Image (cartoon, rainbow, N blue to C red; front, side, top):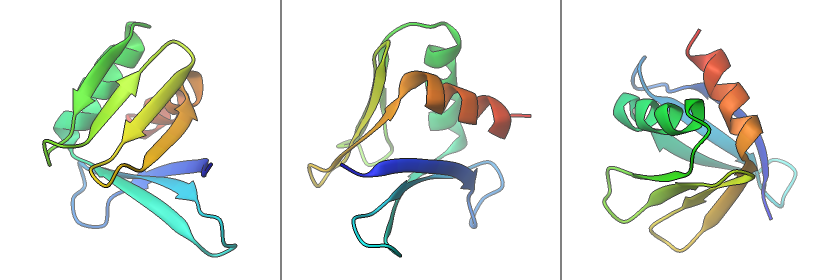
Length: 96
């Protein structure tokens, strides 16, 4: 399972972000891009400490938020996970 590393600003848009997971190889990273709207919807769920789902722009991928784990289910059947409190903390820092 890939390990969540960080959230960083997107290179293409100041309002978007990149979520980065460590790959299996030392220099490999997996990146999920999120638009401002997707970030806002995810943050809304996390700030209310509730469960929910955010559908991503491609209409095939989704983010599933549970109390303990947040899953990023991507179009190619890849699933990345991060503890919900960790992603919440990172999003709060990004929004400052």
